[in-house]
Length: 353
Image 1: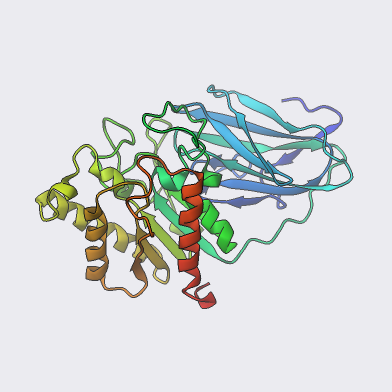
Image 2 (image 1 turned 120 degrees about the horizontal axis):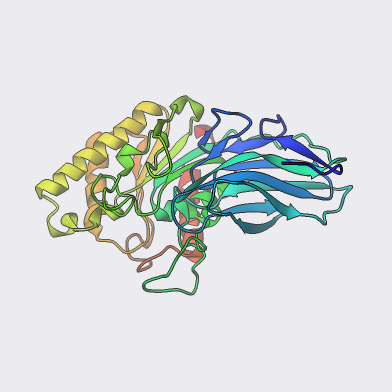
């Protein structure tokens, strides 16, 4: 990469950059973005702005999202592993400050490595905003990841190649913005709790109980790497998982007392208690969504919550839980869910933070 005389590189490890989410910092000069809504932000002056990235493609078309001075846009990445120099702006007001947040729109359909920003030679990197002390973490599937969220006018079998995915508009991200909190989103389209069900990594499907403690988790992209939970400590954790366990067979609907239903409940309880072990002081919210599903799953979660008997592990239901939309969570759905969840969080009082 050759810089022009009028340009300079802002290295990825510069102190003025602010990162958010579960990111691989093994090489501080080349952090790897894995999970939806993981981001890097910067305050700066200057006329021009580019990014340097490499894409690690698995499936779908891959996009990076960014918000520059309050306007959200996206750019398409190439599917090869070349170093990509992508222009985000070349007509900014040179003597004014600008704010950028670059974020991962999609889930493990790809990862990307970030090498820094290219700015005008006379640009200044300004003191960043202080990170909020409030921290939230979400575990979930496509609804948490924001898959299909921009498919406003589509019903039925949606033809989707990544263009409708946008974690920034997910109910998880809207909730975090409502609460003015940091957020970490551990989510994947099609994922279930258990292996061998759901859609993720079919036909050898992988469940959330085997990725929640990982940094890299898609075997089609590279080596599986464990996550160090000391890297982020939330005061609230939301577990939104289970709807994809009804695929290929909705055994909970068929018989809540069946052996399969009991096995699922045992694994769900173990998963929740594993989260509790990592975050002994957090409020842990057990929920699903307003996407149509049989109420037996929510009853099972309610029973597990009662059985655990922890005052800070709470079962939460939305006003239209399981009956709000037939297929995909759209923008208005996400807004309503975030509104209800935010009110619920505020009911805990300010002292939880």
